[in-house]
Image (cartoon, rainbow, N blue to C red; front, top):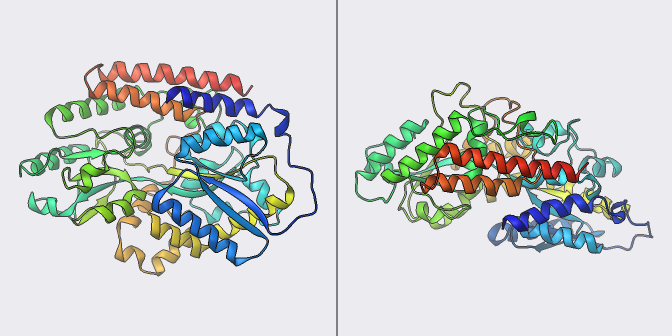
Length: 447
């Protein structure tokens, strides 16, 4: 998998230098209705809902038809798009997960920046309309949005309400610190009904990237790469080492159970086997559909002795990138589609269906007016957490080239520590060294 991702990062940077990437196709008289292709990395209920959103747009006007094509997962969508770009038949719109942002931003000739797209169509985007914690992730140093924020999420702390009651814990007051999580886990396990107290999904995202932002700690220099491609990773400090070692110790004690690199831990929670779970806010729909118990959610836990914690969490999910090499008429259609997706009604419906954050303040307010958060407070928990404090250089987001590959390097280190193969210090030292080598390789490809 790492070789495959390395190929993606190097190829995407290399494609930017190809003559094909020199701009839009020659204009011809538009032939309507015009078909526009959108490749996505989501399937299941979420993928189906995106298809329905496109169909709603298609029926709202008669000039453009958005065809949604599922490309497997995010990594497969990126790989397929690069191959298609080389062949000159790239899609018009590509959904890219947040850790691919740096790679695409370093390949500007491959994309059509969204702020340019909308301005040329006479529909400029007002950044003030969007959650700043979302737009900062997808904007350049001048504050221009390069991709369209679409499915943004953040991790939150889910817990089994019925299990809390059984263990004598207050379901209205979940643990807020890591020592409290460990204490609650031991009380839950004392009932004899659970295999472990807590687990989490996407370990790098939840326990390194968001852990760092939540504790106002840098994952890397240069504002986590946002101020330059020559940034260096620095997550092998005492706080991150201590946290990883504590997770390893808790796993030995049975307090914590590792569930895999992605969303593999979900069944541990939804089956009722493990009663506390750190997962994406967008995991809500799946949990609600499969769990047969009452559950709720609170903020991410933090270490109370770390100054500046809690700060704010950062986003996951993805955004929509517009590929280069298309005609002005096609770009006009994409702009109209993005304007449709930006409407408060569409954004609010997508937010309420999926569990992703409402990327606009208007959609957030509309959801509040509709009483959505009164019915399902979990969704407001995610928004309150990510907007808890104004973001700092350490909590705006990440902007590292080849970060999908670096994330796998981080996971290698975390797993080595959790299995006892390495100490936490050695594991993170090695991950930082390997990750910095990837950063330097990416930096060379874009010079």
